[in-house]
Image (spheres, rainbow, N blue to C red):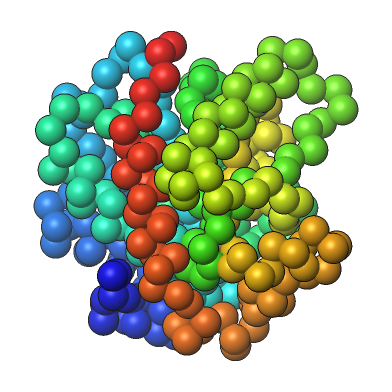
Length: 264
């Protein structure tokens, strides 16, 4: 059974410099990183060895925002911390994994419109560099619940057919990932957008994944807001709201994702 580490408590402390924490955690465990500064926001790019990439297969870009409102234990500290642990595992992996891992800054600003979101200029860089064919997975609020949830996405009405087809293919791979990681126990539900909104707005397919407790799934199906979402951005989004088994499930998803290979 997964036990939430003491260092997680340091990560959610009010005075934690989150960017510095992430970089020091990686450095301490032998993993390099670099800061990508865009429009006042600092995104952290994790550097893996070149031999851990195979050009015959798609890159899987994994994104989680590290900025927060309040304590932010579930939103989005849990996902970020699990990804830090996973980064250490990936760095020691023999052979290739094709993971591109980025911790983004400024996701919470998206409430003022997608163009205000910290990941928006990052997505613009992807577009400018022609990085349009990655499988982009955004993880948000992964610290509470036993059911993986794939966010239902409403695509732009004038989206090109090529983009729609690419998105549908990515969504199918995401569904297979969740099915295989959870023993078939997963849902596709309407959720708030995360950093996936910035990429979709720039014509780049991206999916978002979260977790919810089984009992709260019915609330969403009834059109009600589940307790987990009501906790976000409040003092209730603390360590006591988290379920260690969620961290364990998220690690299963991540390990399956590292094993997935899609031919280009």
